[in-house]
Image (tube, rainbow, N blue to C red):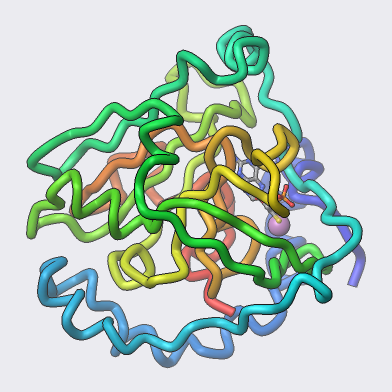
Amino acid sequence: MSLITRRSLIAGGSAAAATLVSGCEPVAVSDVGWLRPILDFGQIMSMRAQRLLLAGQPLVREFTEADMSPEFPPNGTERPNGMAYFRHMRSNFADFRLTVDGMVRKPLSLTLDEVKAMPSRTQITMHNCDEGWSAIGQWTGVPLGHLLGTAELMPQARYIVFHCMDEMVRTADNSGFYYESIDLFDALHPQTIVAYGMNGKALPVAHGAPLRLRVERHVGYKHAKYVNRIEAVDRLTHIARGKGGFWEDRGFQWYGGL
Ligand SMILES: Nc1nc2c(c(=O)[nH]1)N[C@H]1C(S)=C(S)[C@@H](COP(=O)(O)O)O[C@H]1N2
Ligand SMILES: [Mo]
């Protein structure tokens, strides 16, 4: 398997994309595909109903500090372009706001301190990038379920979309920003957190400062970095090219479960 990065895939255009996607189908990702029709609760159930059912969801393995990788490589964007992000970096994210909106009764606009004041969870987990590497790191953040509960997710909501501050490709309609989405099944999983801490320190810029998603049962590209907006929706078709994520819009699978 030749290791072509997804970034070169953007440059290479659609012919290259077709080759890459078929020649480098992510390992293990489709192994549990058969589970999906059963587990696609997002299609039919409200958050309250899902909470009840999902209370007993299996957790991914958590490691000890001794297992943590000495080097955790950054991947994809390592520092978003543009003045807006540059200013955030310079002011240490003092003016940053996390928006939680869409199909919620109480939209939120939170400072980083407000996010940090929420209940937190710390977990040491293995990150698996489909480009062929993995690393173990420690993450601290607010459970996504808590954010959605605070915002009072509406029963019509089916997916949670993460909008990011890094623009991957310049387009006239601003559809070239990184974004990702997950269903409520994963959104309410206890290990799904919006992280502001990594390995005991503030989340570094290279790893998605100030906030990034950890959705532990999924491959690397689902873990959106530089998140500044979390949107609850009932469908994904109206966002960017409609496939639920920047890479999904370019041929990668939406379901990134390991
Ligand atoms: N906003 C944004 N999120 C992103 C990416 C990106 O380029 N931009 N890359 C993804 C990929 S492919 C991986 S493997 C992980 C890498 O996370 P890390 O930089 O902390 O290693 O972030 C994911 N989230
Ligand atoms: Mo990745």
